[in-house]
Image (cartoon, rainbow over all chains, first blue to last red; front, side):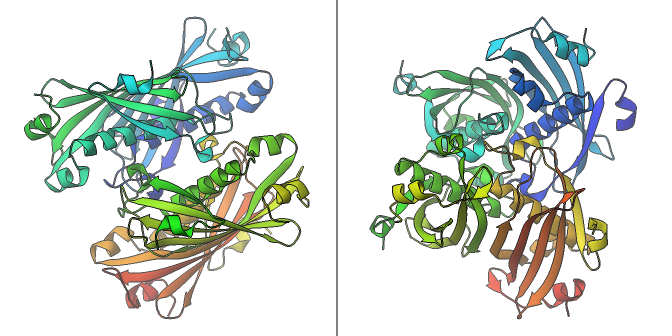
Amino acid sequence: MKPMERTGNMHSVEFRVRDYECDLQGVVNNANYQHYLEHARHEFLVSKGISFAALHDEGLDLIVTKVEIEYKYPLRSRDSFVVTVNMAREGNVRIVFYQEIYRIPDNKLIVKAKITTAATRNGKPVFPAELIKQLGLE
Amino acid sequence: MKPMERTGNMHSVEFRVRDYECDLQGVVNNANYQHYLEHARHEFLVSKGISFAALHDEGLDLIVTKVEIEYKYPLRSRDSFVVTVNMAREGNVRIVFYQEIYRIPDNKLIVKAKITTAATRNGKPVFPAELIKQLGLE
Amino acid sequence: MKPMERTGNMHSVEFRVRDYECDLQGVVNNANYQHYLEHARHEFLVSKGISFAALHDEGLDLIVTKVEIEYKYPLRSRDSFVVTVNMAREGNVRIVFYQEIYRIPDNKLIVKAKITTAATRNGKPVFPAELIKQLGLE
Amino acid sequence: MKPMERTGNMHSVEFRVRDYECDLQGVVNNANYQHYLEHARHEFLVSKGISFAALHDEGLDLIVTKVEIEYKYPLRSRDSFVVTVNMAREGNVRIVFYQEIYRIPDNKLIVKAKITTAATRNGKPVFPAELIKQLGLE
């Protein structure tokens, strides 16, 4: 199964490991995978016409409340990889992102993650009706 | 309850947020909490006389296989905080770290995390008998 | 000469290298020294009662226009070090920071840097009269 | 003048700003430009068939001894940009990289840098004859 065949409703972004992202052990530092996952989510939201800055100016924020990341296999210097983004609604305020990282070209599973986010308006949890609509999660 | 009173078997490390760790939203970027948690774990292991470099030279690695992090409240520029480390054995190859981040001085809970690690020798899962002993987890 | 004896007008901040700041070569990644230098400058300004946030709210920014950094010797995992900050006025809009990094406890010179900053109000260069006064650079 | 027309002997790499690279002021943090410059240099060397890992295994390292970076204009979230790499020999042990960062598509100059590197074998300065040849700097 190639990355391109996984993309039904899914969004995916390609990256290459940069040397400064690796640590003493010669592999990508664990925290950097969270950067990759975040960047892929933001690219996905932009592709849906959603701008964090514009939302924030209207007082609406989508904040991460929980991350669960399973590290299956490490990436090394100059590895290419794809980060996928899939999404579901959970209750009234939570939007959950299911994400995976696959090495290219052998499609090896590197990371599997579930990222839970909540909508807040001026710091208080809200039902983000319009956002839900824009994301096709109604 | 003050940080100092939480320290039974527990190790804790104090930090202050640096400006470059904050992002566009004016709060610490989510991935940086993972850096704080990692640094506190490494300080803890060093306090037990355990050196990653020495272990690695003997072929033994303690690798992170899963992180679960709940974000309760954000840290901001120049906030002081303490990261706690507590630990338990899980099965034969896994050592689990329970960690919390509290803001200083009001002791507000910022992050709650469970970090699962596995011992590997030359890439294969092993029972880290000596490490278990050094950590007092027998 | 110990770090404490260097502090005439000077400000200094102590750090310890964190593992995630090191790269594949086992030494601190070059860009991270810029983080250390920045953090020490901000701590210095705070010690003079100067808050970037408050300045920014009044429309005044102190922006870095040039960095010159000489790398003399690398820092490694868990090294302790001190970052010094000294300062001078250059012309009407520039404030220059002279900074050094010394390893502790052997006082080995690690980095020597000159950081040039300019004051801007709403993006235009200005003479920061009040800031110059607060910093004792009149 | 478009980026593509600047590439005579020059190598260039395209990037897009990721949100986590921006700081409190809403612009890319100064240290991150050093990451961009480094990544472009490494890509350039790889394009010349030069592997840091292989060199390092033979005991030869190309280490950065000085950086001079002029910050002309800030990059913001999601800006696209190109990093150029040009190179010259300086004396017997130094190889100097001249690098620029231009925003895409308006070609605005963002950063101008000179990065000085020295070849060392087992920590001692050496004349890197073979490297000089591979890089076409004879």
